[in-house]
Image 1 (cartoon, rainbow, N blue to C red):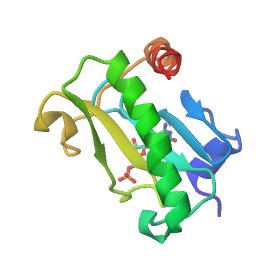
Image 2: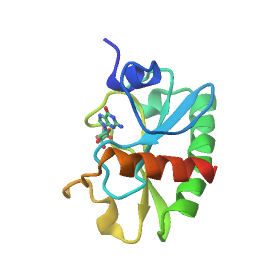
Image 3: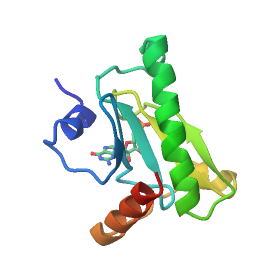
Image 4: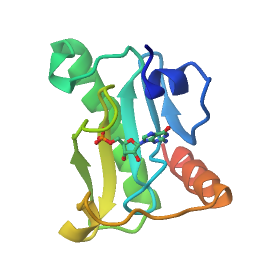
Length: 130
Ligand code: 5GP
């Protein structure tokens, strides 16, 4: 069965897209830790990130770097933290989280509730900075 992220890639489930190329997609996390929390995924579904072949994994990191720089320009933060968990969705992804301290990237804390307009405006602002 296709992962929820493959359904996003295929347009069967909506997302707030930040960036896309032939092989990768970046979109806002639906339950963000902070404003600007973004996920980067390969379009080709692989569960575990370290099962991705070396070339694609390298390209994914370069794509994530471009997105992280745009997040950094958009959201006031000390830096953009990166994390890989994969405990919930079995489709490899990198979390990009604008952080000012360790608490901002604590995945056990309550998530933000943003409305559609806020998601839209954050995604558009990041996209403009790419
Ligand atoms: P992980 O697999 O890294 O433990 O967590 C998966 C992440 O994907 C979570 O932060 C969760 O909020 C996010 N997520 C799960 N389903 C969706 C979805 O349908 N859309 C979006 N945009 N994010 C999702």
